Image (cartoon, rainbow, N blue to C red; front, top):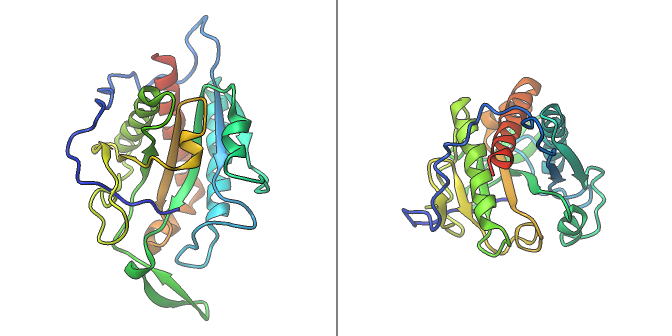
Amino acid sequence: MHPHGSNTDQPRHSPAAIAVSIVLAAAPPGVEASEVAVDVGHTLGAYGATSARGGREFDFNAVLARRLSSQLEARTLAVRPINFDGEIESLAARPQEAAGADFFIAIHHDSVPADLLHEWNWQGATQTYTDDYSGFAMFVSHENPNLTTSLRCASAIGARLRRMGFVAARHHANPRSGTPREVADASNAVYYYDRLVVLYRTTLPAVLFEAGVIKNRDEELALLDPQRQTLMADGIATGIAACLYAR
């Protein structure tokens, strides 16, 4: 999955001055646990981007989604797994399966357009890479039925990840190639991508999360590191918990 950025300087909606208590780790006493639908992007048959070393995006997505699910459950949030087996029949089926949950997050890893890639040899095979782009990013849709919560949660996730030392992607607003995306919250790498099915054909607030650029050779290795995966999942889960329990 490789959406790309916009020149808009100010968000259409204020990114929820994340005065959200990001240290929240579990539901406050007396508050019913929220349910988060966690979607593994792409499928076994259509696995998305290929990493700099030939890895399948779906595999990256599945690992992070499972780690995120564990971290959400540790915060007493219920998890509804979507497409964990990689065999879901359609994009539209994903938001349908999430109906009734409180929040939807689609897990992806990013790439860049083909004209920005270079060739290199990895273990006897020609692969493509770029070392010019990196960082996490999130996408929301103006057409989502609850854009306010979508934005608040995306900003909370981004704020927490940045506090933990993760780098936010900046290239989506002004890409050298591809479609610019309107900025929703520049500091926390939140952008608008209106026609993503999983974001607008849903009945609940939704965010598409790009963990990093797997075409970047250094970032690919970082994204494969189990400790870093767990740390990122921890940050995402903390942001979601803070957002949902601060409503």
